[in-house]
Length: 436
Image (tube, rainbow, N blue to C red):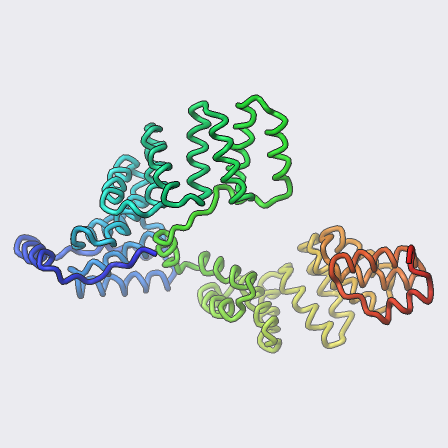
């Protein structure tokens, strides 16, 4: 991890500041136009400006302000801050790499050559950070200097031999230079490290085609069918990550909240959703997702009003309808629960969890045919859902379709779902287990 900017008391630094104060006014921070900003972003930027004005010769606040501007898309203003931070940072300070690296990112869209020049200086002073070498290679490649790009990629790979992105970039260079076999070796290593990176898979297929083996190229593409496509391989880049984490806009907060919820970090998710509801109080999706987190944490009383608010704002909000259905089912109000589940499916007809919940509800009402239809639809949409196969087995047995019931039992067991022993015993009494 690259250290953050620090206060420096070196004699040379003090002299530089004295000289600066003798001939020039203290630099003024750029002030962003906050009219189109969300209030929490505008307040944060105002606070950072005040801190800078209180201590304009300290590089750390300049870097923090620049990173915050950068994270919110204000790259021109961010670049100004990074340049000012560099003026105050003494030679050799590792934080100069941070400032230059982010300055290059800020310049990339408007001045690619300038970005490369900045990054060259960063690499010359601090050559041990692989992402800066990879970034410089990309800039050199975009500027048409393929040999220089290749040299950067090789240096990055020497520092980090397990970098799938370095392997991909170098393999792509070899492919562009007509060295298909060398490209294949590099791209296969990259794909082994990042099997969901569609860009690597596509490049490897092209390399096999260029090597005259189109069948292998087709095999590579077929092997990726059905896999998620992450595009480029991942990269460990703590400098860039720290900058992006300064983004407190509601889209970024929502992204973090969803990631926390998916990862099971419900306490973190609750904090983030609570902040979001203050910013986007009339966003039905945010309210429904916040309610679902509270429900998962066992706080049903706090969840239900949020579900209701979400439905009031958007009657077709599927998650809120589903949540209300679950609450009504817990209370034993099965007709009301069925209504909510069916309303949810009107908006999201391909949601397997809702079909499974509806099937369970209908089964409890002994409406076996429609229950089975809902459970079979859940199975079609999510073949890995074992509990819904258990419920389907019950419905099939109640309908006298014992062979199919046993088949559903075996499917559920293969998926790791627990089948109640009492049900298996009752089913065996009705019909012998096939092949047992």
